[in-house]
Structures are given as C-alpha cells and as structure tokens.
Image 1 (tube, rainbow, N blue to C red):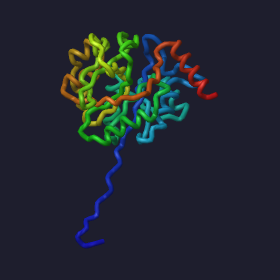
Image 2 (image 1 turned 30 degrees about the horizontal axis):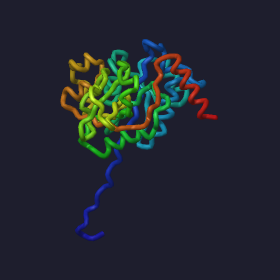
Image 3 (image 1 turned 120 degrees about the vertical axis):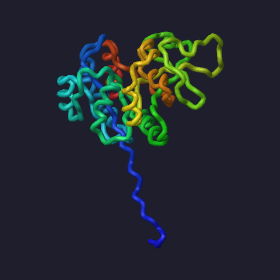
Image 4 (image 1 turned 30 degrees about the vertical axis):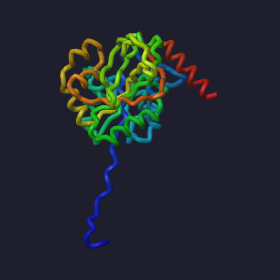
Length: 258
C-alpha cells in the first residue's frame, strides 16, 4: 500500500427488515391471519412470499395474539409479541423497532398472500438509494372507467411531477371532469417502507384531521410535511378480506401449482 493511501472499511450493507403486522380481529373475516388457504394459514403464505425478497435482512411477524404467534412458530417463521393496545400496524412496527438494529423497515400487508417479492425489493432499494427519503409505497394504474375508481374501499393516490404523493383518498382521485389522454387513476397498495428515524418520529405525531376524515394514516405524514415516494407497479395481487376472497386466492394458488 502506498504510504499516502488511507484504508477505509467497506460501507455497511443497509439492514432492512420486512415486518408483517398480524392481528386476530377483523370485521369481515375474524381470525383472518389464520384463515386456511390450501392447507396453510394466510400469514404463512405472506411470510413465504416476503422471505423471497433478496433485499431484506429478515422477515418477522408482529402480533398481539398467541394463536397467531404459535402458528408462525409452527411453520418455522420469526415472530414477536407486541402490545395489544397498538392502534395500527405502523404502531406495532414502531414498538418493535426500538429493539432492532435496522436502518429501515418494509411494512408488508398481512392479507396479501400473492404479493410480489420483487415489489418488496423495489421499496427496499428505494430507501437504500435515497437516504433522504422518509417513506415509500406503491400503486398500480387503473383506467378511469374502472369501478374501483369510485369504490370507497379502494384507496387512490395522485402524484407530484417527481413521483412523490400529492394526496391519497377514498374518493375518485382525480375526478375526471375532462378526459385527459394517458392519465390514469392509481390504486394505492398498502405496502410501505419507512426509514427508521422517520418511523420513530411519525408515531409521535397525533392523528391528523385528514387522516381521521379519510381513515388513512399516510395522510398524517403528508400533513406534517413528509415526503412519500410512490412506485408505480404492475403488481395487482388481491388481498383477503372475506371468505370468498380466500377461496379465490386458493383457486389461484392451485391453478399456478398445476
């Protein structure tokens, strides 16, 4: 080594954990996380998909229900118990992250057993590439005539020119008073990536007015000046909220296995 050269340690690889919040209660499908789909509980399908994401250093289920914890342990998954008074999956993750040596977390919906591992990797990579990014999420295009545009159960988003979220709403967004060639609506997917320090700050903010009006916690971030990058994806994997949807997922899985 030349005398003027100064050795440097290689940069540490970012540690990003995939967290799957899972609760037992569900208005439309009680015990949803344990719903049997093809002989396995729903949470196991989600876990196995998330574990295929190469950018994650680990995957863990966070729950306040011993039945879910036992099921996860039964298939060999990592699980942590969290308090029952966590108001949301985000709060559950923020409680757990206090004891984790991580740089960021990807919040993976516990009711999407067909979620694309590549999408999880995209969110993780966005956090790696932009250290100033607070949050990242995803959305898939919808045609303006799609019934989902007017469905209040489907969350829509519109973006700034830089690809960051301008707003999220259950209402039609945008409202297509005029036909604009090439302009599509965007269905928001409930997957998020958070930088650790931002997540710890986010949960200290009280629920915001727009968040409470729309029942969308991501609006709390926007109302407090945070930036949320939105990745446009072709992943349209369906979630599970009803027994009928669980049956449809089982049909899709059995068809793909043949």
